[in-house]
Image 1 (cartoon, one colour):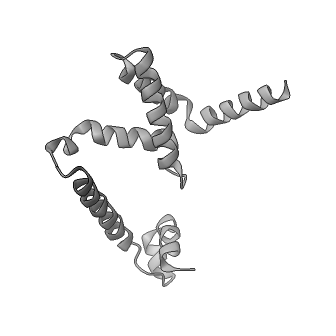
Image 2: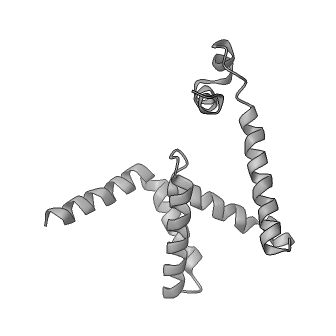
Length: 134
């Protein structure tokens, strides 16, 4: 196993226990994440050929949080799945009610928080299983 594979496991265990078991310091993952974020920002600036202050607005951060909540932060591909679901929801709801699409996505977020993502997704799987039986 590589150190890059061991570091998330060490963070889950705990930093003190990771150091006690002679694993490397898992804080270098923060540096790696910052490097990825910097590369993404550089690519954004390169492809758009312009960087404005709109990049730092609050709704961008809120969109990222919604993507992670919808897709699941504990899942490896949760961010990708959440982004696809979020964009499909945004486009679908915006065609039905262009002025109030944010309300409906907010209501979905409240449903995720109140019901729990596991029970919500499990309920969808149950509906799919029921539909397959028929």
